[in-house]
Image (tube, rainbow, N blue to C red; front, side, top):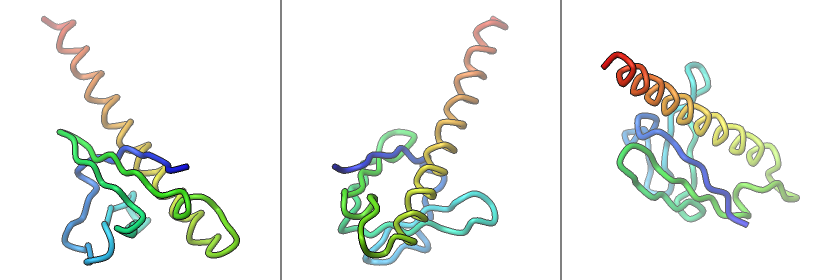
Length: 100
C-alpha cells in the first residue's frame, strides 16, 4: 500500500535534483532526502507537496533495509516540519483575529 506524506514547498531543492530523483532538504545538519521519481508521485498544492511513495519503496523488505529506514525517517521529519509550520500559521491567524 502506498504511503502519502505532506512536505512544505520550502524544503524542495530543485537545484540538487537529478533526472531520476526529487530532492528535499532535511533539518539542519541532516543533509538531503532524494526520492526516486519512478517510485514517487509528486502532487503540487498551493503551499505544500503531496508526496505519494510506492509500497515497495517505503516499506521494509528483504533488501536495502538501511536505506528504507532512512527514507521513512526523512519523510516523517519533513512531514513533521510541514505540520509545525501550519500550526504556527494557524496560531498567528487566531492571534490576529483576537486582536481585531
